[in-house]
Image (cartoon, rainbow, N blue to C red):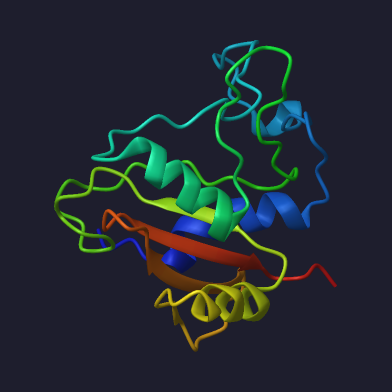
Length: 158
């Protein structure tokens, strides 16, 4: 089965278009009877290996605005905006991202064009997909360690 970004993100875009709010749960009709009562609220962290964790954390902070994990409990962790999140295991042989990469980050952005211009201004190569999908627009870049990053500007809800 070929999975592309239209298929991958359709559920997230549909969820967003339905006007759900943070912490909302699907209605009872859409939830199977044997589904667990308790559900996770969202992703609480993303942990991955790096050859130079300090440098990579600084790169994500400078270029994407993601604050590093605080060094003590007196400071807050990075807060993301509420919105759809796609959770999608891919087949092991996918060509959607590099074979040596076990995961790919997808970040929602307010303005794909503004973010791409900002990154290009910092000397970072960004490839904006010229196609506009029903669920939004996409771009691809790589962090300094070669990890693929996808930027997603969700389609506006009319």
